[in-house]
Image 1 (cartoon, rainbow, N blue to C red):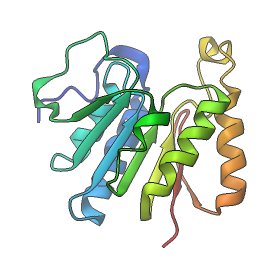
Image 2 (cartoon, rainbow, N blue to C red; image 1 turned 90 degrees about the vertical axis):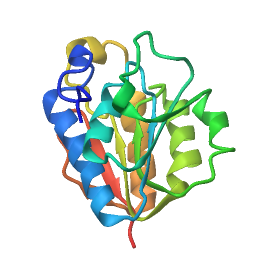
Image 3 (cartoon, one colour; image 1 turned 180 degrees about the horizontal axis):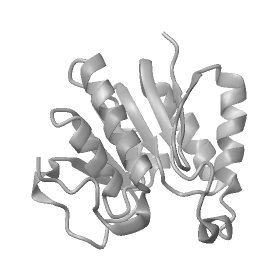
Length: 176
C-alpha cells in the first residue's frame, strides 16, 4: 500500500505513535475476523493512514465534526461520518475491535466519547487515546488535562488492562 502512513501531514503524530497505531491495527487484523477500526477525530487523516497500513482489509471508519482541509489519499479506502461523535454513536451499531479517540480534547467531550463508544468494543479489543500525556509544550498550553482526567476516571472503574504505549498515547484492552 502506498498510503503515506509514516509521513502524512507532519508532526500531527510522532513517529513512535504512528508505528504504535499501525501495529495495533495489525494486531486487531490478526486477532479478529473482519475487524472494525474506528478513529474519532481524524483531522488531517494521519492516524487513519497508520491504521489502514496496519489493517489493509479492515473496515476503517473515521468520525469528525468537519472534513479535513487536505485531500484524502485514494488508497485509504475508509468510511467517513461527518458529525459530532456524541451523536454519531447512536447510529453506529457495529462491534468495534480497535478504537482510537483523538477528537475534542475537553474533559466533558472525552468523557462522553468514552461513555458512548467504549462499550461497543468487543472482549479483547483495544481503545487508545491520543494526547493523554502531551509531549509538546504548545499542547500543554491548550490545557489538555481534560483527556487525562477523563481517561483516569474511567480506567479506575473499568479494570481494563493497561497496554504499553508510546509518546502521548494511553491504551487499554477490554478483558475477555
